[in-house]
Image (cartoon, rainbow, N blue to C red; front, side, top):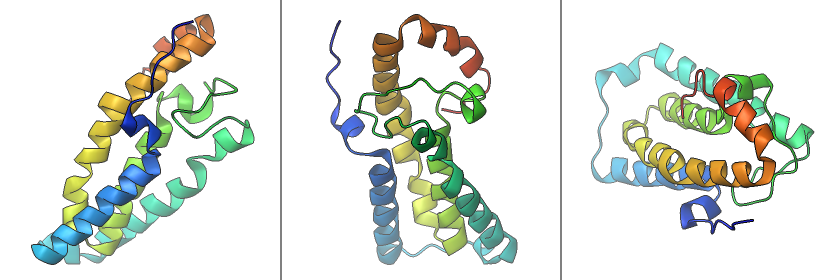
Amino acid sequence: MEQHRAPLLAIVPPPVQFALTFLVGLAVNRLVPWQPGWTEMEGVRWIGRALAAALAFFAAGRFVFRRTTLNPAGRPAHLIVDGAHAWSRNPMYVALTAIYAGVALGLREVWPLVLVILPFASMNWIVIPFEEARLRQIFGEEYAEYLPTGAALDLM
């Protein structure tokens, strides 16, 4: 079986990548303040809070319940194909992106919102391809059968 060496951004946990990017955005905001008028609308804060709160509770639940790894470089014990995974092969990353955006909106922080493209790109072009190669290697035909249905509404 061919071994895939984990790229650095697959070893750094995705929540850490999102958190570090958010902190960089906060630092940029201190250096170059930017507060567009739309951020003052109360609805923006509520949308942000709702996104962050709802998804934070459900993002990792299925992995924990099924006792499989949350670590992209870890070895998965089970292939999860139901629930949110029936709509997207990567609902955890969709949730992390939405939580990130929700917190940025809830705090009315524009620079972190602009920088969300960085962890999004890392997930799309580094972490997910690494994970998918490992899942193909570990689960073989079972993973191949999942791909057509899991790709229907893939956001990442």
